[in-house]
Image (cartoon, rainbow over all chains, first blue to last red; front, side, top):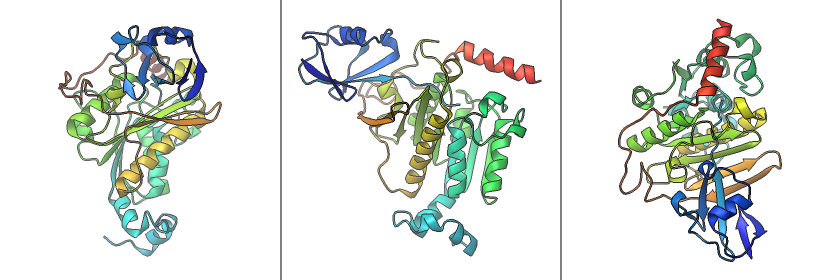
Length: 68
Length: 276
């Protein structure tokens, strides 16, 4: 099925959870990313229970600590 | 307050913009902006705010200019190596526009000094390089209802958002600092100098729009770009009711110092010690 990850369409297996999608996308440490699904934040504790649906839009927002 | 002929000429390219005009330029001249971190983000922000004629610019930084800074911190020049960054930046701002009052704070921000430092300013620019400072700035700005621009850079990436009271804060998106050393710093992972310039300049533009009260700020939006692919996108965000600082039941009600990312700090201390 098709979903949008960070604005780009990607085909993924049906039934994947947010936690599984993070692994598929090689986000090694879920602590490093904030996840927004269809405009709503997904709590870290809900990553494995939240299952993706066709046409979902998901954003992985990464920490960026630099500035100097 | 009326501008003199030299000011009218100096700021003519602003004044000619119908969105700025004389009224907007006068607001800029009366504006008070604090830049926390006179480095990669703070340097371009300070240069543009100085050129724009912002009346009072505050600079907070406890570091001295180091040779590794010059690849991106464009307000510091080779002869400035070893000089406090706030002094080096103040000198350049005054060369651009001697009318600007520059207030320097040669220190880091902590829970016990930040409130006093930010007090008199209209808008804050976060140009710091570590999460403890970024979260501290967010929290103090939420608690005191102070608008600010968040900025973060790494490698070829940058992200920024603007906060005003009532809109999404940094913690609405990133609840708490990442585990120590989970996210590399610029000194560990590198950063393209021009990326700092791009992001710091966006922050300066946000500050100026806020001061003149025109245009659309990056509110409830996180602007993310990657300069390697040169792709920009804005992610819509929203105020998070479970946000620990601005949500309906805040759990953070006083300022707190998080532990600094140790490896980065030690590196800096070593450099400063070596310089004497």
